[in-house]
Figure 1 (spheres, one colour):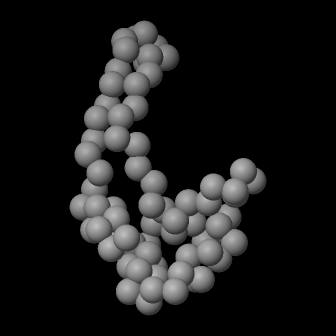
Figure 2 (spheres, rainbow, N blue to C red):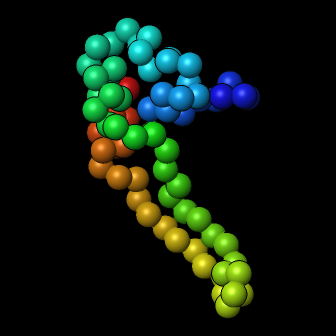
Figure 3 (cartoon, rainbow, N blue to C red):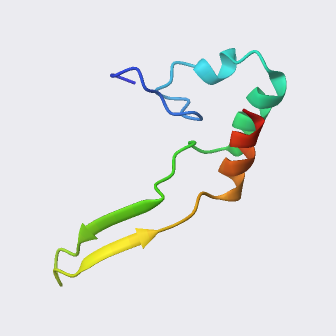
Length: 71
């Protein structure tokens, strides 16, 4: 919010922007998502105890893909 990059579905920090979307179907889909439109496909880090380098990969979930298709 501070740098003017709100997250879709974040009712606390996006200043209600989701409610100003003119397309009623898209507005409803965002409300029905019931979470942030936020996803990390890949995370990499060094485990703090074992020092093993870990890489986690997760494709985008179907609910986010479906909302993206509406756009």
